[in-house]
Image 1 (spheres, one colour):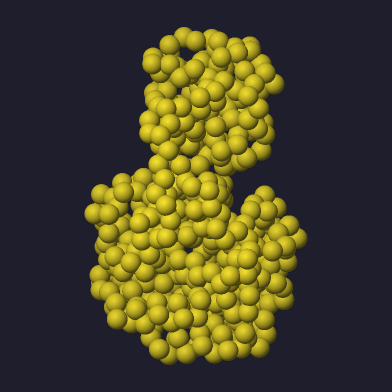
Image 2 (cartoon, one colour; image 1 turned 90 degrees about the vertical axis):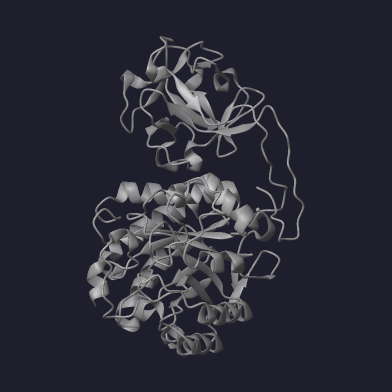
Length: 482
């Protein structure tokens, strides 16, 4: 962002906080691949929504730990709320966990948890036409405990009563579903990524240029577009999306520092969706003064690295856009502390490091790099504001041996395009430069609104299907993802 640009008045349109502004399920036809549709009457994807509560059965915190008790939560379409019904009457989540009557219990009050699928009778369920879901072993019904309707209400087995807390609607059933051909998703094709020279390579040491989109600041998104698994799969299959960036706001009201549980839950939903869809995911600590919350950032990344660092999908981004502060005395020490925390649990996933002046002074770190392996450096541009002079900084960084990743860009002014303007000629120059240098990118931002960087038009459904809802620079972004 350029300093001194006036702030937008509609918070949903902001790219920066006001105070700072004042300062392939299937391989798509355009790709080489085979369209494969598998018809199955016994495997369908569904959410389980309570009739009485209107909320969905949810694995809290997107946990994948055996024994985690499921609960009601606002429906997001996330992987932790998406179940597959199988011919053997299982309700699978994450592809390998099943809804399970804890300990094989058959008494009223038995917890309903997730557990590794094992074919046991306590993991078999009859989904009935009256809306009940009845355990095969126990004969008891899936029940929102105490007839609760609030977020966090635990799910148990209970004697069937026909109450609204025991009746559920499912968005699926026995339908024709599509199955992703083995090896067709980005992660299946490329696997573990690593830095090779000044670019990124896959497990076969072939150069990779990832292309995708960033979420809106998650604390300001108008709807949970970035947290919806169906939408992510649709973007993968129709836009050739390979990576999604989870832009977790940190400093504003309602963001991570003031509501960490909500923010972390949003990020973990996006991570788990990325795993389910076979795409890469950037975990972005979306802050401008991250040095002021270094201890919180260290704890955040250490925790997620411990739980998700084994996955090849994950890319870490510890500081979105530092301000005009010293690389040597402020930014580099912060990055080193966070990198050390990540590496204590995750030895190899790529870490992308923000650079001074809203991640424009990418040439500055060349003479005083952060210590570690598989480190890349961030360059951000907005084509109506940033031209060849900023690409020259990128060239200098690359000549010095730095590997770059453009984790945010727009074909607009640096304020995110509050005037609705797009500058496509200059944006194309950037696209050509990134392609020539093997620089991966995610475009700003997956949301609706008037800004020219909002990818979606008003009325766009949360679940995808956006062919007729592209807005602003979206047609240009999608064309260049393909």
